[in-house]
Image (cartoon, rainbow, N blue to C red):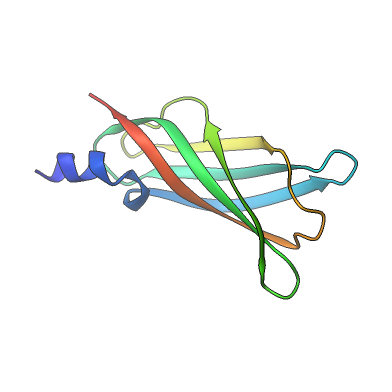
Length: 106
């Protein structure tokens, strides 16, 4: 039963840490780096992250989703480097990354 719950709600079992990002104003692209850590006993694939960009006043300027290539094994930590996101607004002062979803490998 616990494994089914882990498969159904991956966003509750994948943690994100060590977030950083940089913005290329010439192209409107952002490059994100962070770590993913599995807190479960299932293997995740096709991980999607949601990126929320906020202006200096705290208002949301854009929300994007991006896919993270590869798999995340049980209890493992993976480093993601320079995940490219297009169409990022120039007034985005901060960005927050969260897990939007993933598929479990059976």
